[in-house]
Image 1 (spheres, rainbow, N blue to C red):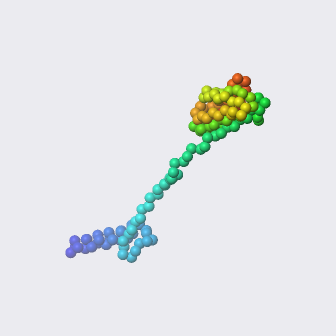
Image 2: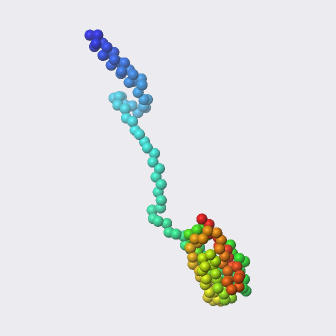
Image 3: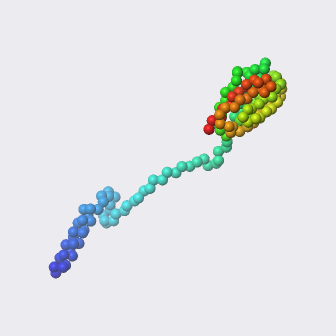
Length: 143
């Protein structure tokens, strides 16, 4: 009988500890069942559904009138990798030279020079009317 009392006392103590030490849950139901819900935080980054198209070429237009660039020497800044189209209209015949890229095109009245290129050279390059040694523009490529 003594063993039965010890077992009954142990059960009472265990039950008491269960009710005292159990986590407080406002959603407890009366049956004594406890439901624990774990939540995880997930950050989802979504990109564009379709690949983005590259920007259109940057067009740099220069007009030479009276043997001088209209508005003076142009300073142009473009991003590295950007496609650029240099268009020069001139009232004098000469050769347009894009230094650094070593691109050359003839220009004459009514026959503009068109120099497409991809900006790959970091820093500044000059555009000039080659035979006259006349600067037309400075094109700076930045990363």
